[in-house]
Amino acid sequence: MRQMSTSGQFLDLIDKLGQARVLCVGDVMLDRFVYGDVSRISPEAPVPVCRVVDENAMIGGAGNVARNLAALGAFVDFISVVGADKAAGEIGNLIGDNERINAEFIEDTGRQTTIKERFVAGPQQLLRVDREETADIGAEISASLVKYVTAALPDAGALILSDYGKGVLSAGCIIELIGAAKDANCPVIVDPKGDDYRRYSGATLITPNRRELCEASRKEIFDDDSAAAAAKFIANEYGIENVLVTRSADGMTLVSRSDVDHLPAEAREVFDVSGAGDTVVATLAAVLAAGGELLDAARLANVAAGIVVGKTGTAIVGATEIVESLQRQDLVNSSVLKVMSLEAAQTQISLWRERGDRIGFTNGCFDLIHPGHVAILTKSRAACDRLVVGLNTDASVRRLKGETRPVQNEAARASVMASLACVDLVVLFSEDTPVELIETLRPDVLAKGADYTVDKVVGAEFVQSYGGEILLVDLEEGHSTTGTIERMGE
Image (cartoon, rainbow, N blue to C red; front, side):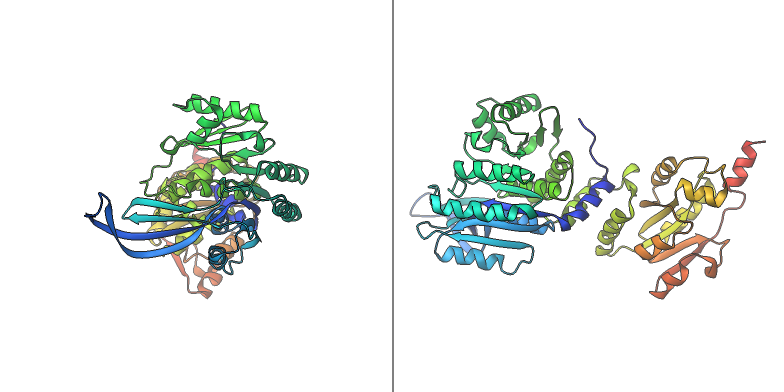
């Protein structure tokens, strides 16, 4: 398996989703949910009696892809076809004035807007009622759709074709759109439908589930190897660059022309899989549009899918939820992944602050970790909920300590520092002082050794200006890096 990005890099990538722009095209529908209690069987027929307690509606199909994109922070150009009916108006009202979704609905007076109505009791879906038309849109409407998409492509970082088989994306339309996207050098992600994938030829990525891949490849899938074989067959047979197979409890399998990566399922209690595929497609496209690599996009899509199946209804997943999920998996807290860029650290600290955590900060070269260092760090951590350590880079250590220092390079020092339980995050800085780091992170507690006085602590005046605390930690006598180095030379 290829190496994926570290958690810090993931956080950098998630932070960039706010600059991504994705073009989403496909079948929009209105999802209605009727929630009720079931406590008896009808005397008229052997069916449960559902006493309705609540009802709501949301945008489904490709509309749910657009909702997920907006929740991730991306900007969305959403193009679809609706009927001249009440459901179309409801869809428009539900989008409302979401500033991240720019919707263009082409009205087809000869069609009915698709409605899916689900009846739910507790976690159990009792019944779904569909009102829809599945015939392909006519040539005139199709031409209008292609025109809108072609005009929007130059600004798009990725194009999603969300094919629900309701007629908006006919085979001819899909071929035209993929061709236009390739001309614009825009990656195309397809959520496929049916068993004929010739229409998706040239796509950057398709995302069939296990059943869909079985039907399209006519191959049985029972383990990682058979999933990879079926996906490779599809890629080679139809000229598709990459295939991501979603396999429920068995996770995901990403197959390209030369690589195969199996991503284990995110452990989560499953309440409802409605719209999980939409979340996967949206996350993939948003990450690619933000400049991420495909494997990283698949990894984050896998995390997002694990979150959304734990919700009821046609749910969405936000960027903050993905960050929280990464943290719950200890990806952020493992020693290597605690080392972050300043931008990633800002994202992580914002998340901690949302939870009410008190942020502490200290800094140093920490060349050879000794008991004195550990004591300072432990006492600093005791005064806050999260301790951030600013660590001098090799270049700044040389300027401060001389050409013979550091003894350990910055990667080794960062790794050792991050392995300490009392340290929550490590940020390298190349300046002579951490003042820029302090002003950016705005810690609640600024800690230094008691060999300093408050007026000599870099950043103290700034931290005090917004009510922050300066903590001077008593030193452990007899411990210093310089002394250790001198004793080593004796």
